[in-house]
Length: 382
Image 1 (tube, helix red, strand yellow):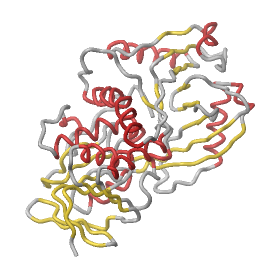
Image 2 (cartoon, helix red, strand yellow):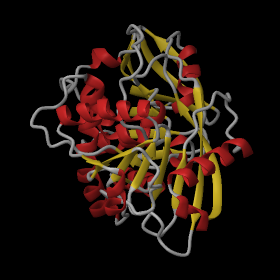
Image 3 (tube, helix red, strand yellow):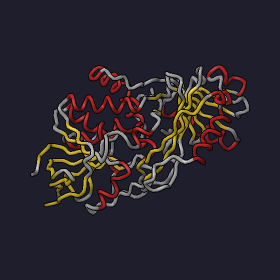
Image 4 (cartoon, one colour):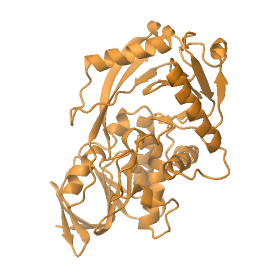
């Protein structure tokens, strides 16, 4: 028996939950379908690393940077609203961060990044080696260079996911876990049915936000938007006393101190298909990199390791916008390492399309049938 909803969202990760939250606030009836429990894939496995909020009067001209800057501005607003609506503190904190260089080449890359930060209105301070301890005493004094970004932020992503789900449900949304989508019915250039093992559903709009599984589902609709899984592994350590004050970053390695004294060390980027098991070499490599950056971490004990599968795309950008040839299918996936940090603005853009508002960013940059972009657009990682 077919059941109708205004919007069906395929995927209950941070992007799908954020889209549902924005639409539910606008009074739109939504159903979120997830292949397992919502928020248990890449969104849960991530570290919750967020970029600094810019104080620039104008948004960056580059669409990717504008999307990131908008998302960063939204996070404190959303966090306060979610706390008020649900009583759940998602752990949003401006804990500050340091970006590090060991070599002359890395120093030059950081100087180039700092030039972009200046243009974007992001506060930073260059630290000489003798001045590291003023900002982060745990840093290795042999490091060549450090930049301090006082507005670097973080969230506790499992709490954020719980808050989004609770707020969505409180506003009348519905979530069906363990309801994997098996196919679609298409007629007249529109998706008219969403088929699951539990039944067939109908909606005015469908949003594809199924993370690394999105590309396979879209292929069944004749839409080419590959989302190859990018495996990321994390190690969680704990000590008897606080060992870090700031977020620490070096290339693709980061260390994130939580309020409870735990420290997240991440993250790898691996082509491992849909295998999400942690591996010993990755675990060892992350620990070795962290200990070299911050020697006091030798006091810490390993508490847990885990891995997640981020959704890639065919270039450095996510897919956000209508699916070619299907008037009521909106795609919001392919965010790779930046799903948590870009989820807020992505959800607002999807809502713009469904609610008939002019999108507040140029979506041509993120359309599915774009020409692949060159690399090097991302300044911050998550």
